[in-house]
Structure formats: C-alpha cells, structure tokens
Image (tube, rainbow, N blue to C red):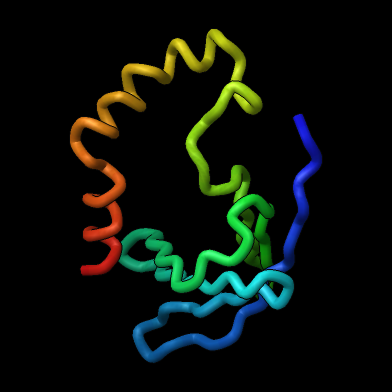
Length: 106
C-alpha cells in the first residue's frame, strides 16, 4: 500500500448550533461536525481527498481512517472485495450516496 499524506485539521469556530467548523490549512478542506443527536459530518470544501485528515480539541481527537473513496484492489484483498461486492452493488442500486448527502443536509 502506498504512503498517504497526513494533514492536521484546525478548529475554526463553534457555531451557535454546536456544530464545529474544521479546516485544513494544507489543502483547504473544510467540514462541519455536529455531535448531537448523532455524529454528522458535512464536507464544505473537498480539499485533497487522497490525504488522511485528523485534528484535536481538548481531549477529543478526530481522525479519518480511510480517505473518501471506494474500496479498490489496492486497499482490499480479493477475499474482502468478494465479501463487499454485494453491498457495493446494493449501495449503487439504492443511490445510497445521494440519500446520505440529503440526510446530512436536513
């Protein structure tokens, strides 16, 4: 697996709603995090989608484990790909990505 860049995100502001706005000074990625009633993440600016992003505030640390991309043969074994294939096909069928974006915009 190839080595990925790591970018450290910074907390820019906390909105009245409690949503936190985080930015990456390296690539310009911007996102909102809302913790209640459940964790919601809204990407405002994509920035470098291949870089791993993380940040910290107080005792809490946010970390992107895998860059935002579809699983590929580079990151998964053949066995893992076979196991995930039905799920990936289902996500495509039900247009899960658009549903998720709409849910996070509400």
